[in-house]
Length: 113
Length: 115
Image (cartoon, rainbow over all chains, first blue to last red; front, side, top):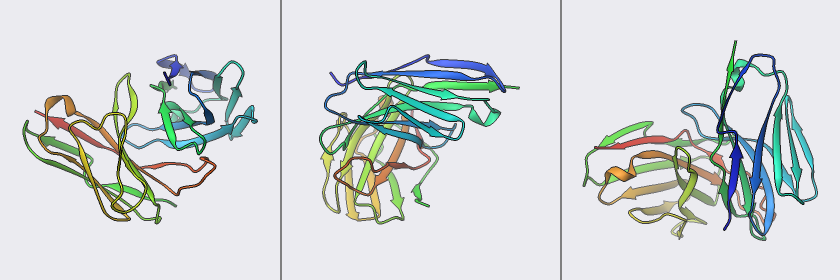
């Protein structure tokens, strides 16, 4: 069964601290993996995308890693800001054209001053 | 910038009513999608459309239908709303490509409550 599991479900950190969010998947055939950020009351927005051959991708203070052997990905946020408070969703594309998506349940991050 | 808009941010309907959710994108994307998002379940695909007048069932199409008469507009229809259809509904669009890297751009969502 194609599944994407994220942990933790929710996380509270202090402003300025780092954090790491986890994503494990059992999707096959794997095409690519995206991390999305979803602010409250808004649609998800893509942060990073990685294919099978890419094991790290950065976007500002966000760094995503991918281990295709263990089928795990992580999203590391450095020097967190209040605006990082959001849900972070791991999305795995499957199929030869990568058109079918499997979504994780998301991690809700709250950054406190 | 891609813009995906949805007709309502919040909607309250009664059981048995017919409900229309509208989605419009301004980037001439062929592919459009309707998802529902529920706590702990993530986003689940209801229907998608590869092009005008084309539609395909997603993972949870029961109780829903769709219409794609124009390229920029994709409508989700609840023929007879039920309380278990209370949810956040998200529309997305994408320019198709064989690599699968093309991003889906999401609308702001419609939070539907069925009483």
